[in-house]
Image (cartoon, rainbow, N blue to C red; front, side, top):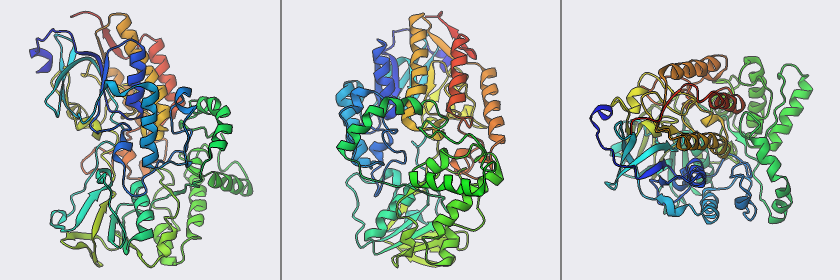
Length: 545
């Protein structure tokens, strides 16, 4: 076992190894270097950006508007300009190259390097890491920044291996791209990537078949072009915008109303919903009434408003009922909303067909297409927009062996256990950001990368300055945090839907709340209390090396 047989006492190669070069990983690399620590980042892709290195499917773009979706460092934003309020994947790639030009990160990143395994060596109090290149590294601390969407989910579709045409998961789209012009395209899945692909395919494809299991409650993006003049004028407010985003529960700068949807008149409520709808993006979801995700009656007012907005755009009443049912399939907002620009409109086109899998279940993938109980659909290209083994999959997909020789996947086999959504018992000197039981999928990514990331940097710096060589979450702290996460979740409407928030999209995965549901403010308050209490819930030790 790792904790008993290891005898290696040589000094580690690095103080810290960071895994992942997205928003969180790059921020860690920069900040840890500033603390004088030796650090290197491992990145499986050939470029920076994390998910934005891999996302290149048609229509891929961010669902958080700028400048909220960027770093708060003035050295980065002062001379950077976007072309759109919601940038696409190409713009995000250019942005991360710009970040590198300001932070000089590339020299400490190993690209095309995937972490395959990590084993804790108790004798030397280090992590021994192995990569796909056969390298072996040793580090005092391991910081995992793999993101909540690192492991694509490809369902076991009967006959998929027999399909003679091309098929791709949206997360594994060819970087050279695919011309959809004149093709017969099938899209399985109606989450964010499905919505985006359908919008683009509908413009040029000969036919688009959209295979829907559950209707997506997509929100109006309200995209718009940005000018340099307008951004220059807005940059005077950027420091205030970045400050405000750290003071909300969502990591955005939406203030929220602070009152119940039922405490105001219907006229006032409708006016508020209209304003949020015009604002676009996640305003309608994260910037509305305080009890939207708690009270079913309040939630229904939001659903009805959304439903009526959508149905007004769809000509065929049968299609309208399938896409925006009169009765909600689940409470509004308990699945992450997607943002759309023309998604509902394309179903008015002759080349787009909606296939309701609840009415005509998928039977198998044939060599030439998809067959449901209602008939066959001949395809040239099959797109799997089937999501991810979210939040935990990117971590459990790595063979990480702790002090007892147990893998992280085995430790979480019957449910996630963490302290503060940052660390687990039996895995010393291991920290994960944007991970399970942290704000993660409920928080704007760059905001979380900075506020949660600063806490981690302060922790590691604190340990290094005091000669501490080992830190480990206690079993009691793990259980206490788990109870707190589940207790808060039970008071919300989130358990009412089978979402990736609940791990319900992956067969066999424990059904439980995977994100901290109490908001960013309470989360960071809990983290500060732990730090002020001498890192309560962690066992610290400076002996043994």
